[in-house]
Image (cartoon, rainbow, N blue to C red):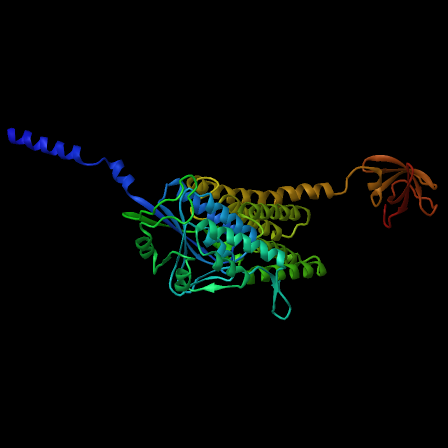
Amino acid sequence: MRLMRRALLIVLIALLLLPPVSAQREAQKVVYVGKIDGTITQYTADQFASYIKTAEEHNAEALIIELNTPGGQGDAMMRIVSLIQNSTVPVIIYVYPRGAIAASAGTYIAMASHLIAMAPGTSIGACEPILGYAANGSIIRAPAKIRNFYTAYMRSLAEESGRNVTAAEKFVMEDLSLTPEEALKAHVIEVIADSVPDLLRKANGMRTKVPVAGKGYITFNFTNVKVEELSPSLSYRIVTFLANPAVSYLLFVVGMLGLVFGFLTPGWHVPETLGAILLVLGVIGMGYFGYNDAGLVLVILGMIFFIAEALTPTFGLFTIAGLVSFVLGGLLLFGKGGGVYLVNSSTFETLRIAIIVTGILLALFFLFGMAAVVRAHRRKPETGKEELIGEIGKVVEDLTPEGVIKVRGELWKAISKDGSTIKAGERVRVVEMRGLTLVVEKVRGGN
């Protein structure tokens, strides 16, 4: 009995000495890893916002962005810079994998981050602003005013992060591009790493180069951290594909040709339908919209197709186009990449089904119900004296040449067209109306 009591006492003391489960969970820190690949657009900015929001909600130790971009839109880039500067979680830009680049807008984003890392075989820089390309392929350089603005903007980011200001200015003014070794030697980046684990090991104990919002400069502590990847959603992968300059340009051009061909061959409806969808997808792919705007544009396009089906029945062509546009627009409108949505993920699963069902119901309504209403409105009224023209009646009183006939069960004063006499019982056809008098002609074999 004493032995049992002593054993229970020992077990109780051991349990008391163990840290609580909640403390063990709190000790497990998390680092999130997200990917940004391709041209910088408003969709990229939305994706950054999703990643940062996830990291902030889970109080992550850091957010690592694996970046591979040739550049992109200036306004989207500045929005991303602002997101990084206002993040309460340190954001590490990691130019990865091998062969990746952080060019143009990507360099500004990297310079705004709390720490920059590069994988071997990558490059950073080449930020000279351009307006486009001439017909012969030569670069159309931006005027001095624009170049000076972006130079000052890059210099400001470098000064705030304590990085090499001279190299930062050359990124813009001289289109300088650096390898990882050159960038590390020039104090542009902080780490060269082969992988995320290698990056965490080398960055452990380093101090952030940029103050973390609300926390100031902090020291990275990557001891005993759990790494979790943030996978972009299907909607983000779709818009990333559309945002490819070659794809968006091709969609835009083919869409325009489809509209032109459709207008030149009226009645078929297929070219203009496909042209309208491709044109909108091309414009969306050019990145001038965010998720919300792009989704709204597609929803509106879907409603236009539904209405067109009701007004101009196409045996379901406009209905299918409207359904595809409406559902795709709804998914873009309410769903974002990185596992973060305008509504929580569980609600979005239900909402996704609701969007599809709503689209199908709208399609059926406009295909059958609304089309029937429109056809009813277009149908000629079946009453009124104008509708008597062409009707067949029967002579009640001889037409000599005036008399009385019966049409649709009503008695009307009538006159024969050629002034001939038409006997009672003969069948006549109404050919004209003169006031309240019907002008008729005899129907052959009308007895």
